[in-house]
Amino acid sequence: MFSRIWESYRQAYGAVPRNVWLVSVALLVARTGTMVIPFLPIYFVQELGFRPLVIGWLLAVYGLGSVIASALGGWLTQRIGAIPTQITGLALSVPGFLLLGQANSFWTAWWSLFFLSLAIEGQRPAASTATVDFCDSEDQHTRALAVNRLAVNLGITIGPAVGGWLAIINYDLLFYVNAATMAASMLLLLFFFGWKIQPAATEKQQIEEAGSPWTDRRFVVFCILNAIGSLLFFQIMGTYPLYLKQYFYLDERYIGILFTVNTVVIVLFELVLVNEVRRFPLLRTFAWGTLLGSLGFGLLPLGVGLSFAAGYAFVIGTVLIWTAGEMLSMPLGPAYAARRSTPANRGRYMGMYVMSFSVAILIAPLGGMWLYEQNPHLLWFIGLIIGAAVFFGFLLLADREEGPGQQ
Image (cartoon, rainbow, N blue to C red; front, top):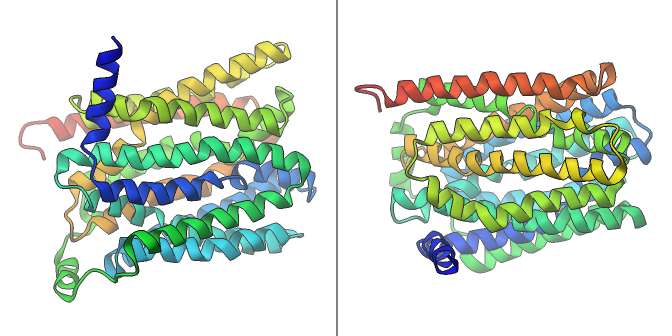
């Protein structure tokens, strides 16, 4: 049995090009400092005294910046190249975190979050594009993107867990450490790849001739469904930590451990899982992942009222469910974007895919906080219903894609 498990890992990891690992190392360092965003709602309540709906407006501006940044990042990736775009975003993230740590009013927090979202989210299409571009064949795309996520989640395994302890000591430490890891990631990319502006002039001409993702109707529908299906997932940036603190009585340390559970499972199992499900239809697998993700969050109110130990065990169980959904969907989304694009327009396809998440980040905190003020428990049931509807939407899209004569 152990030899089969080892062989699965060897096959999954062995076929990934070296440069993909180098990009992923830089991502690992950046995500190791992921400490600020998961605890922002609690920070805004405890340190600045904002009420939930005000926090929703603040987190929504992060989503607004993300929408702009994902389009800008995709465009910039095509003009100067994936690595320089990543380096630029990381460099701007450093002052972004430091400014946010000094914010002491609604508007200073608003502008700081907007600037930070431009810096962070603008590099995401570039990271996916670089990962795919370094592959030797389309067959490597899904595994390479899973390695990319492996690095991200390994970093996030460390970040929130450490951040939870630092928050108990002093919230300012979270902003300083997050800024430092962004700077370190930028320096690593410069060391590994240097600053090489791409594409060349001939490639720029190809970009202008390549098709736009906005004219790819099937891909547009995919992105719309993904945005709707992500609304519940992105409650982790708003109502989720508040709900855990107020109804399960968990402090920042226990909440940080939950994020660590999520990422440890992903680190241990995602790449092997992705390697195993490659033989299944991509969109159908993505649909099941979306449904499981919604189920994991939607079950939360059923654990309210349990004892502390039983409640915490229940929450861990829900984390495992939505983590399974995340592993079945997140690596496959960029792979679908890569499948429908060409090297000449891949940056724009990745930008549009990232934008679907950005739209969810824009809507989720504001809508979630509004519902939270009306009825904190109803939010999760509504999200579960929406997730089920999106699940069937993806299945219908899969039927169209797999039908006779379809591409």
